[in-house]
Image 1 (tube, each protein chain N blue to C red):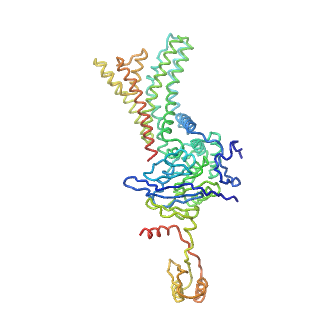
Image 2: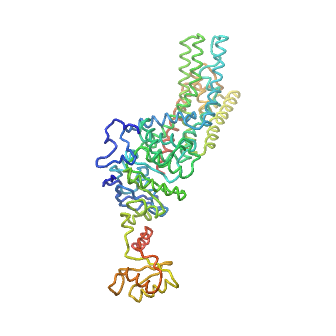
Image 3: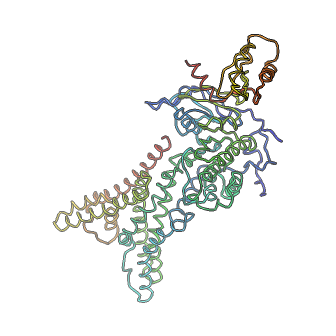
Length: 317
Length: 303
């Protein structure tokens, strides 16, 4: 197993601002994105797609600046676009061309000679999992196959960074899993930095090393995914039995442990217990035993990325 | 597994990056060509696409039928020359394009959307713009593809007639001179038609709309101008017709043709100033359309 050890900054923005007049798409954004897979999270209109277009050097920012792979977006757009692959959110495939011909053509548009473009196209189409169907016109493809063809063209020229705008949009669960697996492999095994956007946060938890949260064109939070998901010191308890939840809560409260019901479960804040020396895990186990209830769940409560939005609301209060 | 290209293996892999071979992904380490080579590849692909090559089978039908019909008169003339033996060509080189102008209009109108509307309609334009070529170069490359296809359409019959004339042992000097003038006129006509059709197609994501709008602009515009020229010639006000001739690429072509060759149109431009105006307007129209294309794609890129 070889690990990719690149610590270079892939994207760096300083005070990046895009003012569309009525809409402030990006509000003096300071951001640093490294190698690996970075998830870009935000509601619709949070500035994700605008940020990607600015990073490609296509749309000029109204303030601030950014460097992509060491190149300035204002003056070195063509150099950046030679090193970056882009999967747009919307449709971009001509229906009367085969995936094979299309990827060859776009590899050549990135500067590969024809023979090399053919080789690369065959290789990336194999990696994304388009087999015999790559010789058929793309008009007849399923959404999953279209997304694969779009991904293949983004990888055709062996970029150092790929920008994937909503790659799982419109996919059924099986195709979604496959696409997420591919995204993960690109970042981890191919050694290509990935910036992937999605409005489904659960997806990004799984595939990305870092998560950047945008809200209204501002940076809400940027950190490693595992930091987002740090244990919160809260335990989840689920018991079975007659009136189990109320009796369990009652008993734990009497033992000096505060509980909050969540659905069919109880949450116990292990840090906030008021008395007693016994380990809180033991206490819960013994309490359930004493009451004759079946303890079916006792686990650490991991946060989900959604919680960050709630935190953000509080922070900006 | 194919061989790695025999170039510097570190060329496309920055120092410090460890590269994975065992998992199957191989980085590309070969050469990366500059914008000139990329633009050339785009022009060639576009030129092929304009004739339906590299696209579906049925997209080859229309361009090749039009090309075939366009060559038919030249082939018939060739046959007549061989079997009968005429003292001169029954139709002038430059006159040929004027005779087949409807075919030419349909060809340009139907194939310009292939190069311009298709990328806009299917969103492919954003993939081109996310690559090294600037939007300006993309626009010029597309324009060059259409210009090339239009020139093939215009120059093939001239070439055929010229070959027939030489085989029929007509005077070499006269024929070469006439053919050269026709080629110059054909280039001017191709420049203007390509500009107009390309600009219309670049504003339309719908192929049908672009075809209809271009045909309306070229053929109906020419029809109106021809009518005005005919009436003004009959009524004894040729100047009106001369001015009207400035408003359509076809009538500009006819005007210059009657100036530079000994064929006569309804109201040919008289006087050096008017003749110069015909040339200037034709060139300026072509240039303005190219400028419009470049401007249009800059807007698309930053949208």
